[in-house]
Length: 216
Ligand code: E4P
Image (cartoon, rainbow, N blue to C red; front, side, top):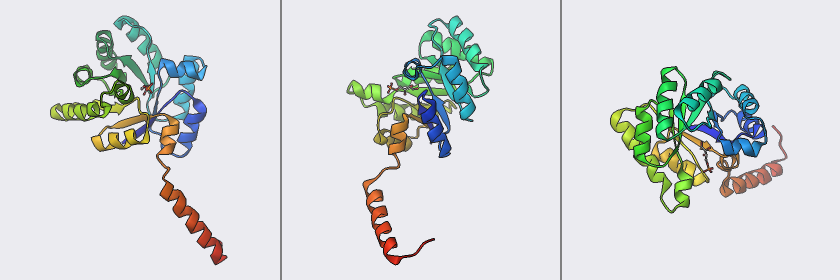
């Protein structure tokens, strides 16, 4: 499973990239607002840090506007992926941008039927939002399982980019469900390395090592 980080915070992105674990980045208008940065400027900077795909979201609501914005965003760098909302206009824009050779990420997916439409529109990625379904008392992970089944049934190449991930358990369940990518907030990504038995084991090893009086 590939790891993307879900942030527009350049310092956080650099930190994860330095470990060599970063496959890509997703942003959205709320994350851009949180960064306090100029959208075009920050996306361009992120694209220079990361070799992998960087999702940048259009803000037009009509297909023509989305296509116009998508073409502009795609011209910023070779690794820009144009993020489009899962609406009728978004699907139309997806089809048109894909025909121009532009990669797309269809976002705000909350049902397998929506995911089926995005795949038929040729989306490079589909972004099902797990946490926001969980928030409503619906098991978001079921959507990942359903999309995996639907895409495998018909051989769709659209990658399942699990989004709205809130916990380490979400990441593990996505991997078990066969998601192609998980886009994870940096603190959650870092938490994957943590286990209390790892900490306790390391502490015991270090104490015993000290007793040997040796160095490497
Ligand atoms: C995905 O691309 C979105 O940016 C993101 O995962 C949304 O997460 P949230 O529901 O925690 O805002």
